[in-house]
Amino acid sequence: MKRIKLFVFALLLGSTVFSYAQSPYSMAVGGAVGNVFGPSFKVFVTDNFAISADLSVRVCPTIYEGVSLTTFSLDLNPNFMYESSITNNLYWLAGGGITLGYIFGIAAYGDMMIGDSGRFGINAIGGIEYKFDIPLSIQADVRPGYGLLFNSGPGVANGFDWAAVATIRYTF
Image (cartoon, rainbow, N blue to C red):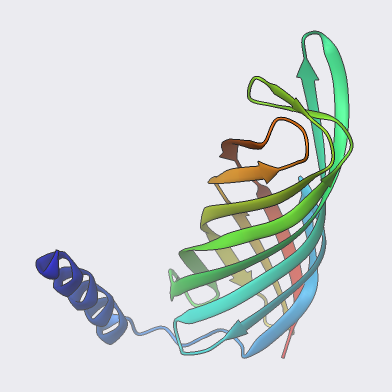
């Protein structure tokens, strides 16, 4: 276990030392669209590490036993990301985060029908970001993850959770 930790530390240190990229901006605010909709905030804490947070409404259409159901959730999704330059204005990013939220309505989750539920999940994030020469950036990413739903019905439901997001932000 100690060797794995040392390897991960060396990998992160090496990638930081050999990366010539500077952060494309300090902070940014904007909005996210995709299967999530809402405001987004991003801040670089070092040249290559950023924290972003989206407060979003997610529309969750599903079909359960031939019946079409649509639920809505209100989610907070902070992510911690490593970002590095591909070209002058194009960057790749990778990291992870958590999702905290609440689902409104009745939905199918795995083999269970659930009602209003609290929601917690972990996710990975990977994508690209383009920083225009004006104070504007656009980011496209995918966020595969694993989620838990807590409700008063059958208990805890769990399963694959994901998001595909495009974010446009004003940078400063």
